Length: 400
Image (cartoon, rainbow, N blue to C red; front, side):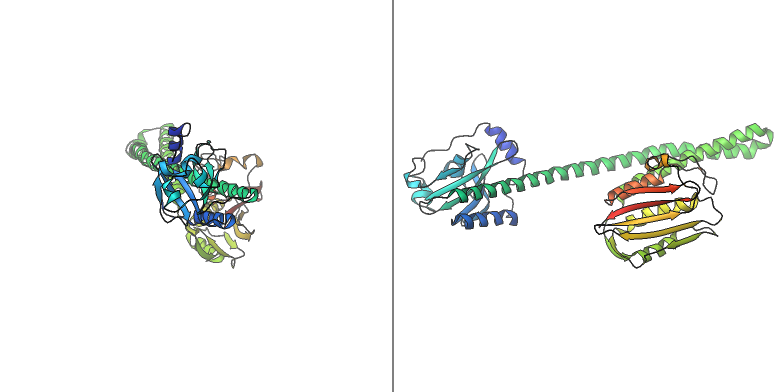
């Protein structure tokens, strides 16, 4: 028996193999289906998906083998991976100088025929083989060899998908850790900023109460400006924290509900002023979506539609359309409208139109940014159509 040679760049090959985290994993249907098909197409009793590490060949899947690994020095597949661009075919093991006295040829499982297609990854390393084995001398037609190559390509595709999923999971875990660190950092910074803001608000109020009568109109106006600026800064800090917390922690678990039940819930939550009309249509549409996240989006849009409405009789209308692969929701108002130049900018954080709401408060440019992030997390898109002086319609999609 001739021992297998080492492939070129063996250290790099092994390093590449270990990146897939496949060795010693449980059986998986995707791979077992491939070995079963390989045995059937090639009409061979044994088929394996083999991975060759530094000391052994290990079977990720096997049909008819009966054990999970063998020493590398006895592995036919260890010979096959030395030439990654060739299919290794041994028609008669007893008449092959490399294997004629091999313990699994003269005894054991009695390998009479072997054909192995190297499983070559994107970096050009042969990780193992897809092979078929017969107990007697045999041969494979070109058609069957091509089919075996195609199945080997499917195995490599499965490997690459697994590796990408591992990388994505690592990235996801890393991003989650970064988000948590940023959230903790934001709360610390916010606390350090809010304390002086509260002190300024309290101090300016106290100064005005105690010494306001001794100040002229300009002095009192300056105190009012200080209070207003401190209150505004505190509001921005609170809004930014709420934005970060909401988009990172919102529940995306799906629930069954009707659009009408959601609209009725919104009607109870929203503080609808006297003279305002809150309407909805298509209430019987049945939804299976992340209700909590959808509710937050609609609340933000409805609150804006109410706060910034400049009409004596304000109107907010909700509706939904089933577009097959997604739902499209609409929030329409009869407010002041939005100039077309701002259609995209309003979804950027801290971008505002410079308007005061119906309660004479200035916006901070956080709400619509939060809405966009939530819609993105729901796999959708948000747009706006508007006519200045007549109103706006926000529409957003949510993937089913």
